[in-house]
Amino acid sequence: MSAEPALWRVPSLNAPAAPKPPSIDELQRVEEAARREGFEAGKREGFAAGQHDVRRLIAQIEGVVEAMARPLGRLDDDVHGALGQLAVRIAGALLGRAYEADPALLADLVRTAIDAVGPGQRDIELRLHPDDAAVLAPYLPQWPDARVVTDAQLVRGDVRIHGDGVRIDARSDARLQAALAAVIHPVGGPA
Image 1 (cartoon, rainbow, N blue to C red):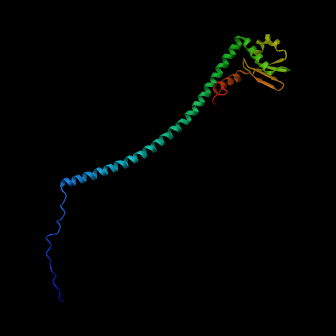
Image 2: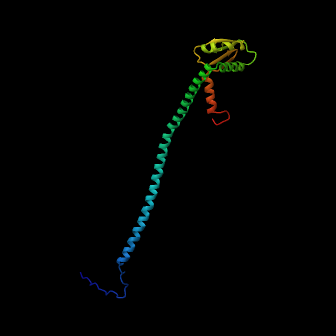
């Protein structure tokens, strides 16, 4: 086995020089630029994630506020209704006292209710509280077609008229409820 010797060749001295390593200043500038670029990229990503979280929290808060507002709206309706009923009761008590103090007011109410029945109605039944029937005795000749029936279930100032196919409910409560409804929901106004 004969091996031929390998020849060593002399390196060429004209070969390009190895690149010069960067200086410390250059390395620091590259590092600072990379740090700034990473910081800005992280800032953009963090801002986008933060915006997403804020939108999600706003949606949750809006849901909570809406859920809290629903019972308050119902409560507001309940309070309006209760205040209306209270106003009706107070007004009814005041009307009853006014009719006791001035029976002519009650006689006007009865006259208006009988007029509402219309002409030609015979056999009208006029229902009154027993105390009101006694107070209105001097006015009864004005209504010869009306038969007075006392009804202890009516309160002072209540009037009901029954006739052929006609029923007029002039109870204080019914009149006040109608007045309250007219104030709350006026005809031609918003419902």
